[in-house]
Image (cartoon, rainbow, N blue to C red; front, side):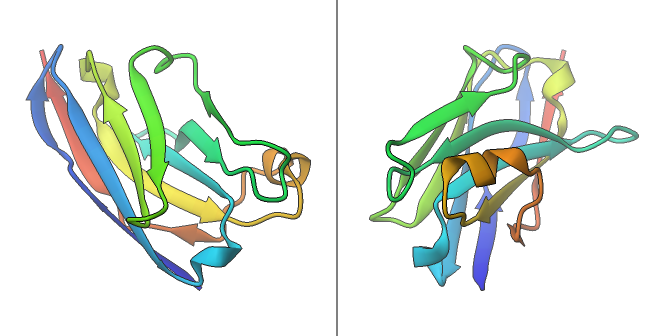
Length: 130
């Protein structure tokens, strides 16, 4: 099992920045694919950024939802067991509860083919005012 704990959420004005952190612990050697999701009130949860490590995948990489591309950056510090989401140029429509998620797969294709994750954090609230 892997435990995930998010932090860094808060209230900010439009145009501002926040950095979310997700500390992971437990059987972390099993994890090679992590993501940030968000869910706004009355809306479905959506994946916004993904990162995968090179171990067993033939290379590391990231991907982003179009609505956050160019504004958000996902990164990972394995020495600190922490996943980050740097959010710049925030907009009111970015207001949501943000969650990190993690899973392990035997290949990138397997991980990318499924939206299911084995491990989730409890979430951190981000509120952007206009």
